[in-house]
Length: 421
Image (cartoon, rainbow, N blue to C red; front, top):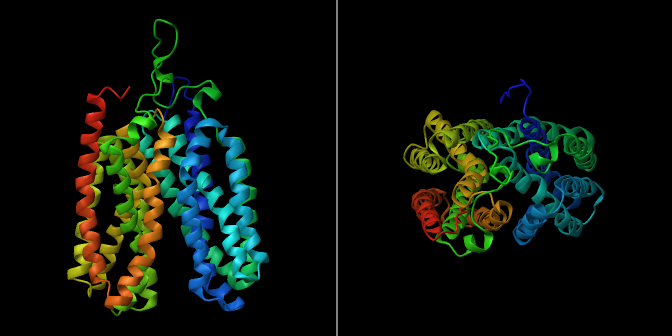
């Protein structure tokens, strides 16, 4: 905790608590619990799971189309109003699923739901942590992503038992309305757009006065969005996030993979537990390491760990202990999507027009979700095993090491061209 001279806790930490609760509930809760409803809803309404899950693809496409707009809105308007509106769209749509009888309802409501979720689950955290934390922003990002895992670990079983005891309709309503009811007061109490709104400097900022009386810290340094868009660094980061998300998407296939090579479903569940623990540890570790050795080195260490984990799955899949450890390490690596994505972006492009830049690079995230999830399924259907997918993941991890190095070369070029100011 950052102690100031008066021994007061800096408001930045309260903003972090607010973000952790909000994103923990919305992402760890609503987003991740969505999958639990697929089987009971499709059974009840006689819809194929494939047909119903199209609404998840629609959500991904909405995310991809509206991310850049969300980045612009967050740079322009008061963040609290945006977040209150966004959680009403996301949680409200989720609750309304409980009233539906036709698959079209899911398709239609997934649009406002995904639009709200962009602000609440994707953009708010990185943007606000950047504004509030001059120092320890890696640790702050790590704590926030760890909260997603922690909330998820409690809310998933709760959601499962609500579906069993109250039925899926009531479960949708309870979770949706509950999230809105908790998140709105949290946003109003704990979230502020800028430290200046509270008459503060960001955490860890030293107040240096210039000759004309302005404080140096109020000038956000970095590259403009226009300059970033034309750089090698920008496309390297876009591809990095695309491949990173594609790698992380394999998580959805860990269960079927484990069962396919002869483990039982109970073991697959335990392995997913190891995966979540790995993600939690990874989020904190990557945040902490980014502050200490920089996001570039941390990213490379993450990719190398991934290669080790996937190699274990390819060459010793039959040993349950090695299998569990490998999936735990894989979870650890997957955490770098949420933690290292934003930190690398800040490190390469600065904070000047961060929300627009990160939102546009984030399209790589959205596209990967749309392509990789079904893609791995098709490869499995065609080949009858996940082996080729695992080799593909190793290839993507190696490409990502190259992309990170390219991205920082691109940053140097931006600096040399005088665009970093």
